[in-house]
Image: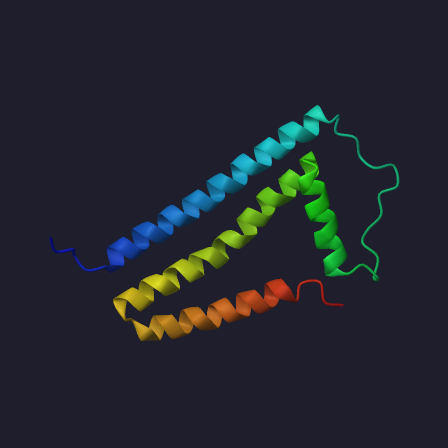
Length: 128
């Protein structure tokens, strides 16, 4: 049985489905988080303070993961937002794989450049 070659239409359809899935996953996760936050009583901290200059990204991520493991509503909402932020990054990786299958090396190079720029910007977002 012969399989048909991977085409631009296949790539566009796959990328479109990936984007829809990412947005849907983000919305569902955020709604679960909002529901959980509502059930927790939706109490805002009495002494809300912004992140000070000494706060490291490791501390922020650590607090996020600890809150998420406890099932706190705010952390679940933040996870939904993280899914939404990561969706374009996954889309570029997905398109890169598609361009490799199509052997379209100009778009492979462009995708690698965009991926590098996005990755650097994500990883240096907390740099002071």
